[in-house]
Length: 169
Image (cartoon, rainbow, N blue to C red; front, top):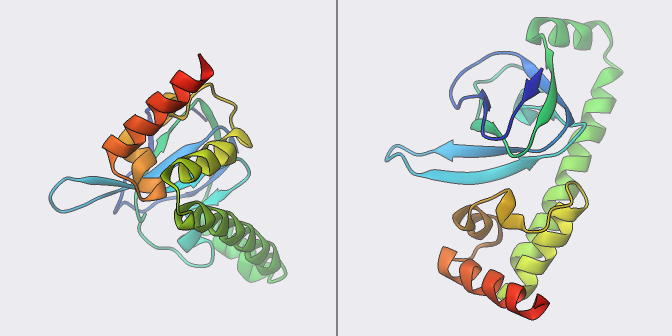
């Protein structure tokens, strides 16, 4: 299945299949009771999601939205869980996938723990470049979303992005 930028793969609270992201990037956002959105995760190629449902079914934690054109393979949940029962050695593969996601989250924590806001932004930009080379991170995310990922206010992100642009000129 092909998803284009901005298209929704699944919505928070729904249940359904698992998905293998073959190419592209997805963002996972949580919708709060007041309607506010919070960016909670970025899904990169070769991940199978939702992570919290790899061993047993659960409702989707957030809403998955394509950041760029994505190729996604739909995985039947009943077939997935039946295969796990029939092949328990597959659980090691899942553990390795989750280990990789934990390492990615450790990199994100490293971004958050930087003292300098400019360094937080720089590390996030470098991290994104490893997956999708873009001229500007704001091609993929709003300034609010960038701020949510690195613990900065939108105004600070705006100021930092303008300073970066001025330095390139």
